[in-house]
Length: 337
Image 1 (tube, rainbow, N blue to C red):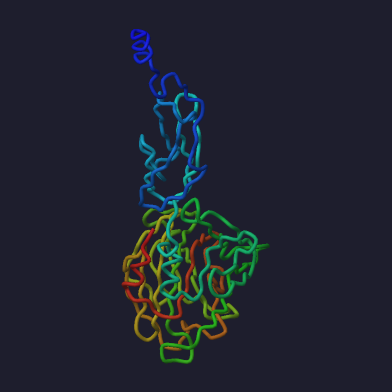
Image 2 (image 1 turned 60 degrees about the vertical axis):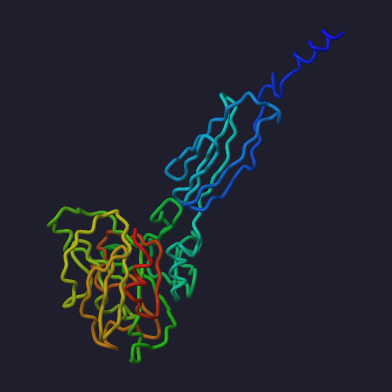
């Protein structure tokens, strides 16, 4: 009897011994993780008392998020990625969305600074819908949705000037801003434009004739579009308007996104910023002069004589307009691309 008892005690089965892994239970099929943080994701063996297993974790896109051997997710960049956990041929997948707080995005930062007009071009059925302020009104044709500065952001294709049946078609947008006169005049003399944009096509080699022959008008104060645009970006050279261009020459590269801020304080100063960095200050023009915005509105990306883009489209992602001149520190807080 004593021997039998000893045998039973010595042959007692250990916890989990002989229990084979049959399935994996996940805490959820998807999880959201704030960019720049680390989160623990849970996965359990089925049956629960199985001890003979060692999970392997994998991320389909480690540039967005990585995962450690213990299921710790390191969120590196906003986006969505599939991950898996398993052993051998037994695997379970789940989705990780790496998100950013809205107030830390460009639109969020601009809203914090009191932006009056904001467009993200996210609605393919209404490309001109405003996130804040008034919708834009298109003139012309050829506007189309496209990808923005990253895979999650949307943008709009602006065909600018195009020849149709040998006649120039001046595609542009109307913005009824509703701003009150400011800057000590009867018109809108102080405003700021922040824009993520890029130009498409054309050579980009230093000294190429194309560089100095292409212009992109960013705004036009003549509401019937019968005069020259009032602010141009010339990709191979500079910013401004005839007689008042920036003194620097900068070779902007085609198919490359840039974040521009144009800070206007007529009668005082005109300041340019590229990717959050101060570029140059220049002659601003006269208060209530040709560059001042009329209370009735302003034309965006408009020019009267076909030189605007000359067939090479402009892509515009986030666009924000303020009814005041932002400070250097405010512009720099918006960051760059």
